[in-house]
Image 1 (tube, rainbow, N blue to C red):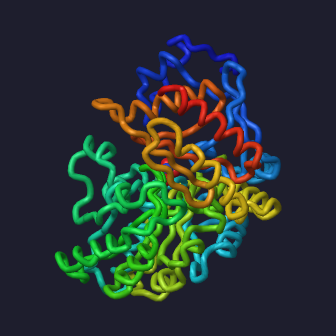
Image 2 (image 1 turned 120 degrees about the vertical axis):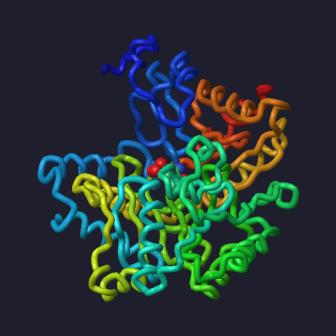
Image 3 (image 1 turned 180 degrees about the vertical axis):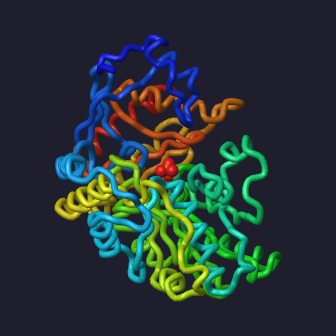
Amino acid sequence: MSNRLTSTPNDLRAFWMPFTANRQFKKAPRLFVGAKDMYYTTHDGRQVLDGTAGLWCVNAGHCRPQITEAIREQAGELDYAPAFQLGHPKAFELANRLVDIAPDGMSHVFYTNSGSESVDTALKIALAYQRVKGEGTRTRLIGRERGYHGINFGGMSVGGIVGNRKMFGTLLAGVDHIRHTHQPDKNAFTKGQPEYGAELADDLERLVNLHDASTIAAVIVEPVAGSTGVLIPPKGYLQRLREICDKYGILLIFDEVITGFGRLGTPFATQYFDVKPDIITTAKGLTNGVIPMGAVFVTSEIHDAFMTGPEHLIEFAHGYTYSGNPIASAAGIGTLNTYRDEGLLTRASELAPYWEEQLHSLRDCPNVIDIRNIGLIGAIELAPIAGEPTKRAFNAFLKAYEDGLLIRTTGDIIALSPPLIITKDQIDELFGKLRKVLLNNI
Ligand code: PMP
């Protein structure tokens, strides 16, 4: 198919697009045919500033030479090696490199092919670990309302988005949810972490009182919930969750699929918040979004339990045909090299003050009811149009796209997460365009 793909229904007939209203899209398609650094090129030849790093993943910007080269070289050298009982050096090299930048205490990584697979892998590691330790009654999993943990059965079950759950029946048994932390009445227009809401972590203790700790394996949260509109943890909240987990022997899983790889100005949000989980899930920025790959980080305590546990449980019965795929591993190494050489894992902390100032300067625009930010993430919440929730933000998305800016929306919230290579001039361009959109009576 050429770059000249038109919008005739015939061109677009066979692809059933994910998380997209296909009927609407195919009437007025938006297609990218190229990308370089901070900009996409559209099929009608326009430049679009990437305000979202693709889907929160292209942290180093687009078509970066070290990544492209690494993939090219690996594809000509070793394209595939079986993932079970056999290996290849790049998967080991990448794992060592990942552990080097990981939070203290994380000693091993288990490879997957996506964020959803990382989440389901993490949940399975948690269940198996409890069993290996002799605590097999701990089978209950706890998630959080408004959590997004991908779309496989485990992640969907611990996730808290009704729209993603309601089509699929009863989901996993033995799952509970704590409340989300979004309190716009108390925390609107907060810069950074909100003051109010740490006590919401005590929901976990209520579930312990209801079910008994001996039945609970793990709790999973995103340190910053991204997909449901950028919900930033209140001060002290994550610490409180950690304390309750410690008190009751519950594993704490941080889903860092969005926050991993420099989004907050530290390699992982775990380091930013200085709260240590037992398991971390990642994907996206691991390969700069270029090749599907995820990685689950575990502590040495968890890993060693499998190495020294009962003989009949010696092998963790889980893995994928493409776990640690050579080309994905090469892409991961090329990505880490780019992050290292350009200082990208800490760059968000340098840009964050300017980002915050420019983002909050939109407060005077019509219909803006909240603005929030952390690291190189921002959200603008708009007043919903009566009877038509989501319409205002979606209109903003369409207008921004026409004006050469890519934003992401969820409900009536605009979410921003540009590649970490963004310059101050490009931050000005982003917010200049967005101001125009918001002033344009959407
Ligand atoms: N967890 C979180 C926190 C995410 O944000 C996402 C994707 N946005 C996922 C899991 C799922 O990742 P994927 O789409 O790669 O399966």
